[in-house]
Length: 64
Image (cartoon, rainbow, N blue to C red; front, side):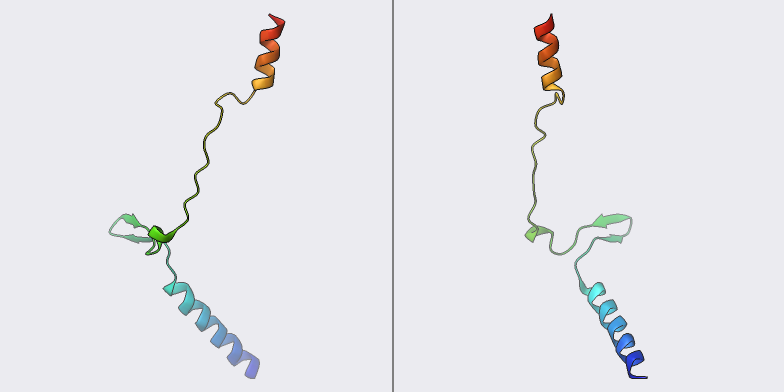
């Protein structure tokens, strides 16, 4: 019977922690960010070159 109590307590703790974490919410049709969005470490990756086939383009220009 003791393992069952441990399981129930674990499930209750998991539910309590998952409800208190900052996640997106949908209120009145609006998707609102978490309360921690100002502290997030936003990563930006530049788009880089538009031409993904640079080597092929260079070889075709050399051939002409």
